[in-house]
Structures are given as structure tokens and as C-alpha cells.
Image (cartoon, rainbow, N blue to C red; front, side, top):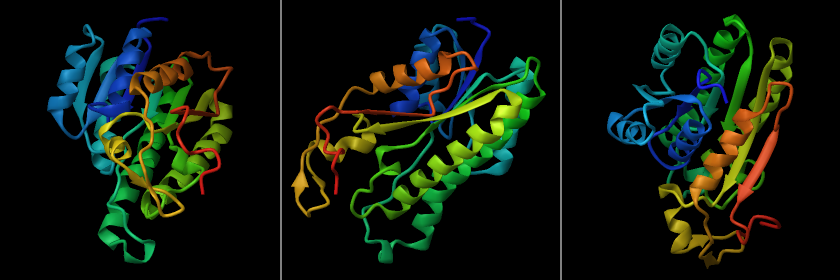
Length: 248
């Protein structure tokens, strides 16, 4: 892999973002690590042998996203891969009781943030020489089947699936590939409750198996490393024994 290829990972300080950033660095990419907090990003960069570059930003803020991509263009001259990973969760709540501010917060990060970063990436990828690039969206198995009491999260992840397909369609004319990775039960902070017991569709509380997020990171790196004439439109990686197939 050419070491001059540039990747940008949102939400890169922890969890799947961290795992993907490390795997992309191992695959030869120079990786821009972004998120709202500098400290975890700096810790990831320190483990990347100079391949990680930290830029703090908030994907839910249009001006912050614009400054992020302007900085990438100024420093590196191009962007080859965007991994739209940043995301958030809200407390388990019946959909009729979800506070509007909780709904908007999740939508702003999980959907609007993906939209803003995708817009900026497409503009850069269309303008650079050679033009083109790849956008990978972090969906979820909740993009296919909901968990109880997760209305805002489920709605945004279903919407990300639609956006992925739209960008894959519109990107054809500009040599821009777009795909989505749907991850189920990676052992991150967001999955902590799964190891102690989480509500199932039948009303029971059940401990669910998890898997090392490094595997998800390597899956992202595989998708990123494909030539632009090949694309993984959707990939699902999950704990083998997770109760997803047949869920609900």
C-alpha cells in the first residue's frame, strides 16, 4: 500500500474508530484522527509510529466539519478514504417518551454528521487529481433489526443505509466508492451492558457475546484497501453467537 494514501476516521479516539485507525495505519495509510476530545486521539496517534495526525472537530457542527476538511486538503492535498464512524446512543426509552433533545442529539451525530462529512469528502475527492476515493459508513446491525427502546439510534442507522446507497449511486460518475460496515457486539464501551444483560425483543434480559473490535478495524482496513473499481457495498461483522439472525 502506498504510504501517501490519506484516510480520515471520525470518532477515532475510542472503540471501533480507534481499532480502524490502528488497522489503517498498519495497512500503510496516513490517518487523520478526529473527534471532540484531543486526549484519546493523541493516545491513539502515539501508537501509530507517526502515521496518525490529530485534528479535533465536532461532526455535528457544519463549520467544524468545513474546517476539518479544509485542513486535510491544505496539509495532504487529497483524501483517499473517509470512515464515518462517530456515533452516539441515547438511554433506553419507549419511543413515545424520547425527549426531543435526545432525539436531536443522536440524529445530529449519527446522521447529520455523516451527511456533513460525506458532502465535504465528495467535494474534495471530485476536485483532487487523480479524482476519486472511498467513503465507508459505520452502520450497525440495528440498521437491519431494532433493539427494544432504541428508536433514535435505530432510525439513524436505517437512514445511514439509505445514504450509503445514494452515495454509491451518485459517486459512480466521480470514481467514488461508498460502502457500509454493520457491526454487532464489538467489545467497546457502548457494548458494556451486553456482558451483564440487555433487554431482548421477548422482554427477557440476556447476556450477549461480544468480540474484539480489532477484527472490525481490520475489516474496515480491508474495505479501504480495495482498488476503486471494486466495492464492498455492505459487510456485517458480528459475534458468532450473537442473537441477531432471527432477532425479534
